[in-house]
Length: 220
Image (cartoon, rainbow, N blue to C red; front, side, top):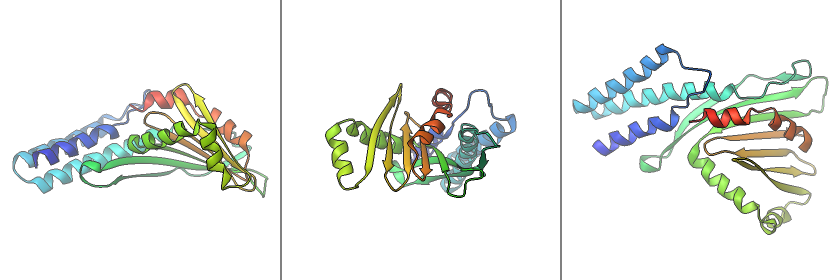
């Protein structure tokens, strides 16, 4: 059981996403630390279920902070040209035991004003180091032109380009009669931009509007 408690405490660490220039309120810190202290006290007293519940409460509070931090990096656009939807925020845990991991995600949709047929752009920012590591590996393989040809052979009119910008790596996929998807990965964070109908130039414009350096530095 000691190992189980240690594992739950370790789970708190990747969720403690603190953003430079946007420090958490002191009350938020107190609530998180109080939940951790209660969890520790319950564990020492042998109340293992209570310990887990208190530590999970601390995880939830940290996830809320992480979501607020990620949302601040969604790109701002000219409100005279774009209708910006509400920010959708979700977080959760996947798996159990040593294979469990956490994820946080924020999404916003942007619709061009005065255009009945679009374009519509959806920007998603996600923080899950375990998932991102696997997807970065796939993109690394796509740097091989032969691998990209294999990926596009089954989809007529599909084009895949790999993008590398400093420590960011990703790909942009465009379908002749579909959407454009741009996915960029850093060590712990992913930005995905989807444009419908397809518009590679617009996808790149939205990517350029993201404070990539600030986002990469903020996710500790």
